[in-house]
Image (cartoon, rainbow, N blue to C red; front, side, top):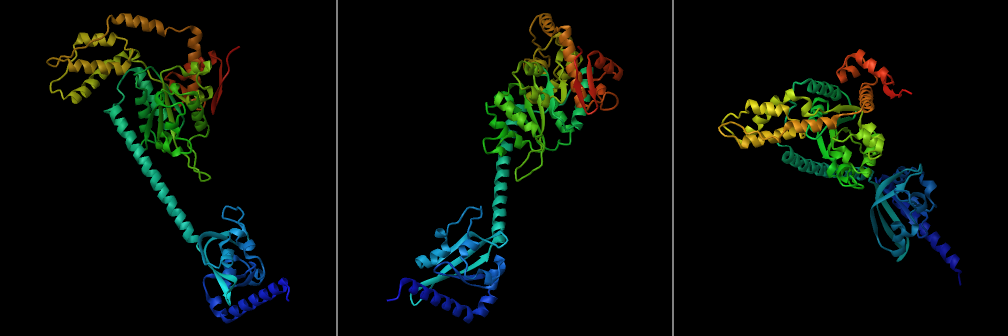
Length: 495
């Protein structure tokens, strides 16, 4: 009685003779086939390889014959993880006797690279006994890559659609909030300086911090900078920082979805952070991280970047808040590259008649008033004497109320009385000590030097930005103990 090993050896020899006969009888067909074709016996050893298979795999056919084909070309998944031969559909064909078709795997070449394949593994029987399998495969890398590009394109289309939907929702919100657009109104020296600062800021790429009381038109200044800059044709996205959640997801996007926030909506344009002093500590940290990455960064490593300029505004003293620790000091300095102070209305009283006329025109259109609205001279004098704690916004409200109560075109102007009491209170509130004044002047000059790269004289210099004579600025720099160099200001307090 023959031993089992002898029977197995005889079976293997019979299998090899079978495949040799197949290869000999069908050599011309195998050599002409465009698909890769190879055979394996019941032990997974390669028995023949056609030229197309050898060419795609990068091997000589003779080098593959007798080798474990799975361990040679099918050993790993596309991500590099191990592909156990017990899970191999090719080997399964001669284990379960069924045909196996696969369309989403890879074969590995001799040089260590891989390509995507679809294949069919068909069991081969000799007198009813499964003795191996024949595998027919083709390289479908181009199709796989085309499908991947299509999926990526569809994903991008979906992302853009979602962005457009968010932009539409944002614009609808802006329409409800903003109403009609306004232009900067005023011929006072304070407003002329603001216009010069806007011109300088519009030509730069740096962050801008606009300080000023509520109602002084900080957003209007930010919009004017944006529209005068090279980003003017791109979005201007306003964010009310006081309404953001502690995490700031509305601004930066939810976890894992950076494309879902207002930063992404501002891509290519300007992000206006109104009342930035109201940001939570967590959101301050995230904003600082974004600014440290310089926001405007190219796409790299498959990760999208955003080209965004930040303009921030606050009615708080952020420098003092930074000293107290309630606002991140580093974030303050990152935002305060170009500093603009929006003047209070009481500091430009000569603009009040111009603003009143502008607001009268707007309310006339809004209320569809046919007659000409007029303000009595006495009321105009009272308006020019009033301190306007609510600034231009309060003035607009007074004009609108006066228009609604007008009789025969004569507007009724109601102001709190006595106006002098408000002036006295506000004047007392504005009194500062000499040390505080010097600190304020020092900070303002440093901000101007930083914005101008340390340049004092000439066009685009700090003197022009501050609207003072260069010799005057040089004298103040010396008296305040400020040292600077071109390319960036550096502060040194006098000992």
